[in-house]
Length: 378
Image (cartoon, rainbow, N blue to C red):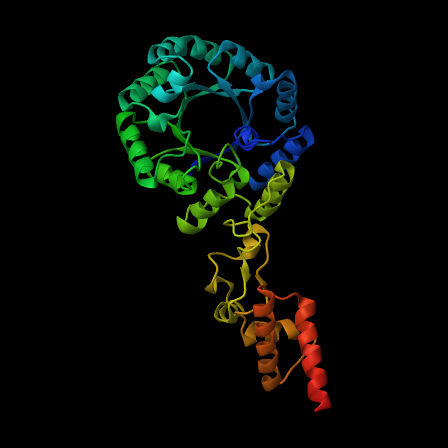
């Protein structure tokens, strides 16, 4: 893996392509502000060719003074590139479909791709300081043609090549192998990986791409995107830091706020058990776990909840033990002798089984109140 991979956020481009998602300009500004707070170095900020309004909003985002580099996405057509130019963007990612499946769907050919490249690249090189070239559906492309496409793009001045797993069909072993082979064939070329999550392997595939020699990866907050979405920015960042020990210097304490804002703006709630930012990711009930967590947060967590702006939480239910119940009661000024605590725990387990869920704080306190009153009467 390169020591410091380039992290590209594409929430405002590929993320907003998720069905039914539309961000307002104010929402885009807030997302950009938080991406800037986290320290993301590059943002794929949108597709200007969508509309004149989109073009104007992208121009405002670019002129807002954020620290990250802004890149526009464009089909490899002069009209799309002119729309990108009008935003004031200094960077562009122009893209061609390269698999026969996608080319046939568009009634285009490999020859059309190669014939169209010089004109698109000529315009792009004359109007942008940084030109990246994307290979759509590269994971299903003919290897020989993909290499010819990459070779020609580099010859024409591409500064980075995006390899897209457009329908999320790769697995980590295949992804790693692709980038090992690409780096052997094109030494010194900067490659980016952009993968989707259709088979649930997007996070792992991006780590595999980096281990295979990719320089850059593009991600979305909460993994939002078309169909099953993209690789989740927060998951990949956490995996790099806590699983692979790659310290990028990002401010993780802003991740939860960023993810919650994107969830609200996209009207897509974060699943309770979603890695890193789900409401249950630092929530515990098991007696054995809670007993250890009271002594060391890392006993049953990969990292401290505070690292990303969350808190470890313990709920009371069927699987609770005396340690968590005792701590809960003491935090509310209730001190019980050991034998009473065991009786309370028994009632808690009965109530949780009947309810088929964890108990609210008021329900636990009510159990204590009833038992305390009974013991006093006896």
